[in-house]
Image (cartoon, rainbow, N blue to C red; front, top):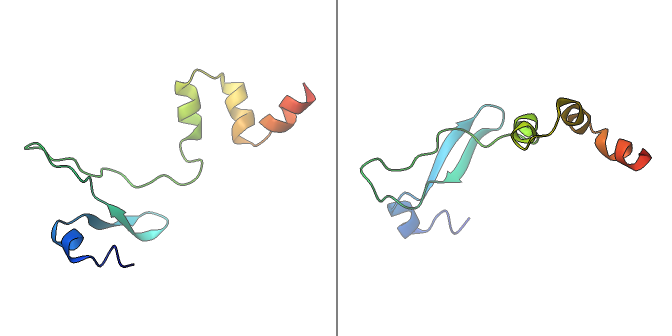
Length: 82
């Protein structure tokens, strides 16, 4: 809590509070560096656990059948049986 209350960090605006669709108000760090006329920003909320699992695995090249087993939590049991 003392870091969040630090006067210098408050003055430079290091922390921001945004609304998460399922978690409510969430305090997070703003991008600490601002080097251009178009400064960085936070464009989306932090994902919930497993929210993007299928998309990431598709990008990694896994077949849909294997992704389905992983998402369903069956991959470990299937791997041990093989």
